[in-house]
Length: 188
Image 1: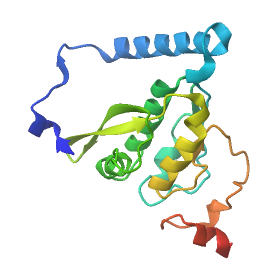
Image 2: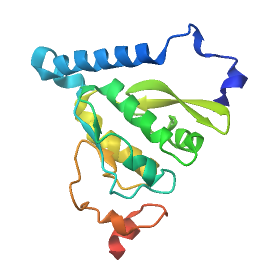
Image 3: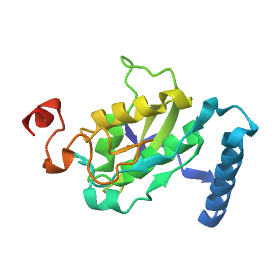
């Protein structure tokens, strides 16, 4: 990872686009994706809603309070767009966003053969960027979410296409800020 100052790159190039226009375009893209996902196109690339289950164990990297402030869900829409938004929200919910970005960074050994996206994080005045692989098709979304949770050492149900209503099937609420592993489930 390199800081923004090391790459010599500006965040928005030389264009100064107001945030309200970026939000409007983002909302329009989600509307287009909603139409696309409701049968007017190929549903193969349509991501279902991704729920943030804030009652689940958030692991050592993510701030439980910030997770609770996230929207209940993101999507539906194009898989790459929805999952990029989910990962960005998670990175911004971290104690140290740069550390979460490093955990999510594409490693050459475990390739998804998905879509590489550059994500950014800011921490202590520095900007960081990394390429993260994101799946493109709906049939890979659930596994992608579970594997990403494993990388972040949190409950595998912290976010994903399944909403946790009262109690998580992993009984993760009894855990403290330690690594999530199968050992914890065996003890409970």
